[in-house]
Length: 290
Image (tube, rainbow, N blue to C red; front, side):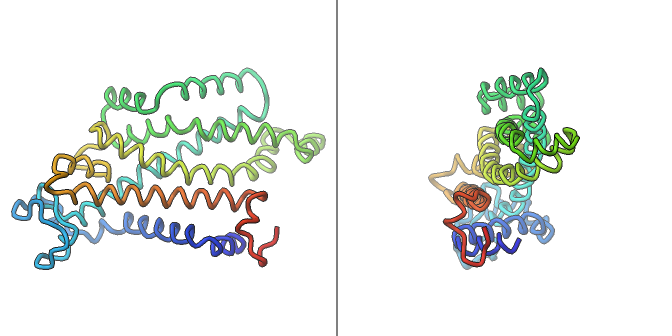
């Protein structure tokens, strides 16, 4: 952890991005607890209140939506749902895809071939089309959105982990462990999983941005999360009819989506570099040992 901290200090952009992500996560977790429920109700007298007017309450500093609800409140409430969906989908895709990749990469047998052919079929189907069909049939609930985002992204983890496992299983230390009588579970737990996890975590950070953008696209198309729940993508969709008269309704959630996606991508790229010995030299200070 000390080495990671020293490496992070060498990349100020990644450091700022990580702090920004942590601030957003904290706001998403504890922010709704401090929001007065009355502020999320219709207040037609404040309909499309313009932002940056000091003659109104501070909660209207970013303006109001078509029902008079403050955009600050809407952004805070939507942040929890957006981040929760993206985090849950990333975690489920990471666990499922890593498990499939490890099983398929440990030995070349019928099960391994069947698993990878299934992954190939999944990759051949356009993810947006698959999401639209499944959500139309099952309904646009939060659980179904998480499920379909997990299914569409687990293939990335599975193929990456399988490729890493195929290479690691040929290393001399794995051969030595098998010579000493180690079984598949021991080899996976002690020799392959610890070396694969840094790559998996780097992919997870990058996939967080991809999944969040995918969820926003589904909500914008009207097949994602439905009211009364709210996500940043749904807020963008709600403001789309008023872009000429009330641009702020779509602008603020759009900026939140873009900034968080960029920050997650920067952090994921930094984590990838920090765990790659051939690239780490670009970040390594003198205090960090190789």
